[in-house]
Length: 388
Image: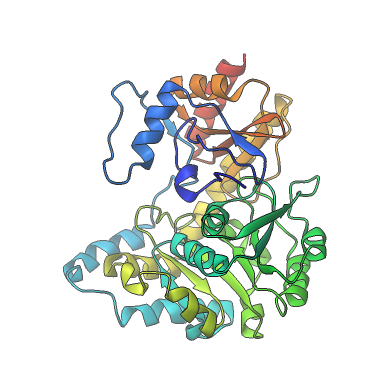
């Protein structure tokens, strides 16, 4: 598995990826001049510059961000917290941990805060790669953790996904051998947007976790309807070696504020903590905004409903044009396109529409983030112009 997809890679504009994704065979588009310049601008975290000839985006639909922004209540808390921005967050962590623990059915000591979920994924990669061994997963998934683990000595073994683009849990289970250090699952999956039925995933964890740690990246879990959302915290409460990674970057709109957390056994959190900068990497301003956002269920419901509305509109519009859209339960859509990725992405970018393209088993795909309804209308207008 050489040069796979990292979280920064996902944030690249237009042709945003130059390294091949051999694990999932979900290969990137060829880089074009505009895409290369955009990529440089979006991924150079030390010197962010905008290429002079980079088209102005009318719809930024490549990073799975919340286009509605943070909750008004979170913004108010953020501004208020500026008065204590000279302080490190400390006792304030307990307030958010207690809220999370109550909802997830675990104890506060089962929770570790982090700046987004990236730190948690990287910590798990570093720990489980130590001394070699294998990490099991499925192909065409989010590869941030996997690339890091392979870089530090792990072997990645990926099972093909099912025909409906879901993790093949029976196949993963059948391939567990003594050298397997961890099973890695993304649910809802990125980039497909598909979900694993809750009962199936829970049964898998109860059978596998006593033998091998199961890491589940739940970055997009908040896009489930609340009544349908899996409550896998009970697996942790039952003592199973399950690690859940969550982020506020999606439905809460904290992509630029950076807040996330892990739910796991206390000993596992202590182990992972050693590979991170610790909870003090979260600013007190972000933490206080996070507490307000987490309490604001009305805003979350609003964002979820608006996302579903825009996603449904786009899915129907594409289907009406004869395109087969993979059913998504997240804030992005993946579908096969009928032209070369380089040509497609350059023309979409020229129309001011920022999207991502990939190639999987020789088939070009577009992955478009769900923006506002206005932005999705722009996307469809641009799409119709490009594909003719």
